[in-house]
Image (cartoon, rainbow, N blue to C red; front, side):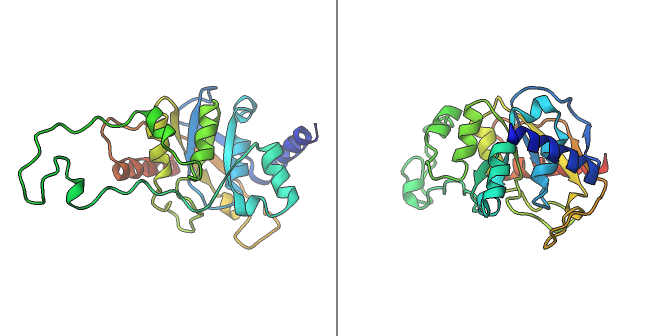
Length: 243
């Protein structure tokens, strides 16, 4: 009960401070499993995008929260766990598995410069196999568990807060999740002005009109490689800045 009351209080506070405008430009608010991915410039991003969702979507959507920041005090931890139902993640992003190197990596076992192997390449691993192979200590593991349980999630593919107008290059997490959950809808979002509500190093928020614009879903195309996909996802977020 206390968590629900705090949720109402925070929702009202965010709307007073920011206006909390949600703009559904490329897709309607819909109760389907989604991964919302957005730019990241403030710790308030988590609160802003949570508040922009309608109540029926907030109840099924879990934002990620940096463990080292949001568990520094019992109050922060209670807010993120009891009110936002957040998923704690480590700031150190996971790296994709390294490709094998050297002569042993040659598909046909031929030495460098030898004849091309004639055997066909093995099929790519299935989403189920990718999830099963994920180590428990991988930073993506808690997100995978949340998606497997049917939750929608909110992620920030830059990994850390940026300070420029354009988002930093996206890290590999979004690509890996798209591989493991091809049925989950990927929705880009642009959070505008929230970094001015609580500038870095400040404690007292400043009332500033903010908005969250949700764009048209994207998907991982068959055979699409990691960097082209991440660059395309980043462009999808940046395009919403002009809407």
